[in-house]
Each structure stands twice: as structure tokens, then as C-alpha cells.
Image 1: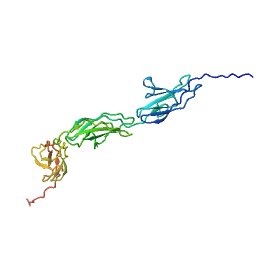
Image 2: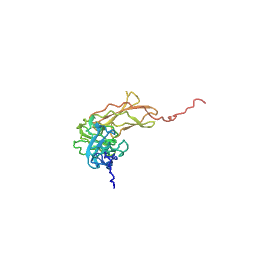
Image 3: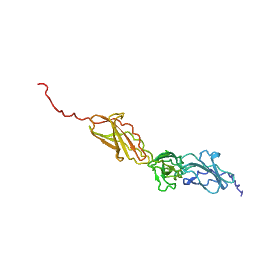
Image 4: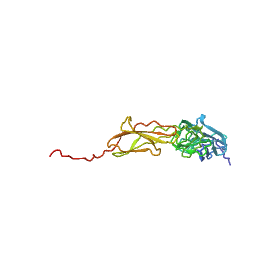
Length: 330
């Protein structure tokens, strides 16, 4: 019988690899797995893996890993919340097949993956911008959000560099990067730290700032003008807001009271107590207008008198009783 000849086609490069699947995703790591493609007549010897942060895979920004044995690969030391594009190609003795497909589509589809977000990076120490007897203003630089927008910054302060018993200032919402910390003690050195928070959590506290010493006590801030709190036809209750004591408690107030808006002539009430920023004045005339000024003092000194108040007018009153009725003609 005749022998039937056997024909064998030439081997060629492997077929395209189906886009790898992401098997593990953390803020800093991506692991991949793929199925071997058809070898097209010669066994697959190894794979080439490429990754980049740009979907174009241009040579200047693409990292290539050669000679991968097996169908898995892990990328480490990645950045949180960042999109990475990847592709893989198979080799046999004939050569390299085409890379797997990739696109800019959603997560883990056609060669794109996004690492998980992480807490923000550590901030740099804050810097002082202004200081007074009882306040310190600070500002700081922005930090990397690591894939989730920064929701707020948190400031804390202490009178020691070790930040023992540190107190937190009210949170700074959004991306504003400044804070005035108030109600501090005069003549004390303070240290400040800041951290950022996103939806993942708080970042690490910054290193402590340089020490900032609040100023020694000063006279109080000048008060705002007094105002009318209550009134009748014959009385006025005058009130005012106690100013900042600037490192020394308010010890008392003096009040000027007059019917003259220029305050050239006035009645003076001295040494009013510091714990009640009001004063009742009686014996006034109905329907008349009055004006007032106030100053404050602490152990360091007195303030200037405030600007003059707005007009304060007592209520009208009924007419006085008729004292006598006389008949002048019959």
C-alpha cells in the first residue's frame, strides 16, 4: 500500500494573551494573573510584561519586565489611588506574540487598574504667621492626598516639644491651610502640629513646629460701642461686649453717659464689675435720646474709650395729671 505523506505547518508566534486579571489590589501593590494563549506550534517559553501610568505606552514612561516564567506577576512600590495600565505578551522560539489589549475603561477592565486610596501623606511642620498675648496664627503647605480628596486638616498644640497633653484646635474643613489658635496663655512657648484627613483616615502628625512664644500681657482690646439692651420711659439698660483681655483678666469697666452725641458733657460711672457687662440708668426723661461710651482695664492698663453708641431713646410716657382746673368765664 502507498504511504500517505504527513504535512506539518510552520510554527508561528503565540496568539494574543487575554488581558490579565487583577488578583490583589492594595494602595501600594497590584498582582496579576493570565491564561496562557495558544502557542501556535512551539511551546511558550516566557512572557514580557509592561506597565505605565499613561494609556499610550510611550517608551519614555513605560516599564518593561522581561523573561517572566509563569502566568503571574506582582507590581510593588506603587502610588495609592493611581491608575495603571498594563499588558502582557507571550514568547516562543519563533518570537513574541502581540500584547494583550488595553483601554482607559473602568477598573480592572482591558488592562487598567487603580490602586486603593490611602491616608494622606505626612504634612510638613506648620509655620507661624502672627502672634499675640493669647493667640498664634499658623499656616502650612498642602500634602499628597493619596487617591482620596483631603476633607480637613487637624491642628494640635502643646507647651512642650514632646507634645505631651497636646490639645486639638477646631478642625479646618476643606483645603484651607491656616488656623488661628486662641485662648492661649500669655508669655508661654507653644509647639504646633498638623495632619490631614481623607475618607480613609488621618495621616501622620507633622513634626512639631518651632517654638512660638506668645507676647506678654497687654492692655485689653478697645471695646466695641455699647448698645441698648432694655428701656422704659425712665430707664435704660446699657450693655457691651467684654473685649479680649490680651493675657490679663479684665478687672473692670468705666462708662460715660450723656445726652450729647459729642460726649462733651457726660456722667461717669467708674469701676463697674468685670463679670457683668451691663449697667442700669434710671431717672431719665421720657422720649429723650442718650449716648454712651465704655472702656476696660486689666492689670497692665486701660483701653481707650469706645466709639459713641448709636442713639438710645427712652419710651414716651402718658401726659402728667392736670394739676388744677380753673373756670375763666361763665
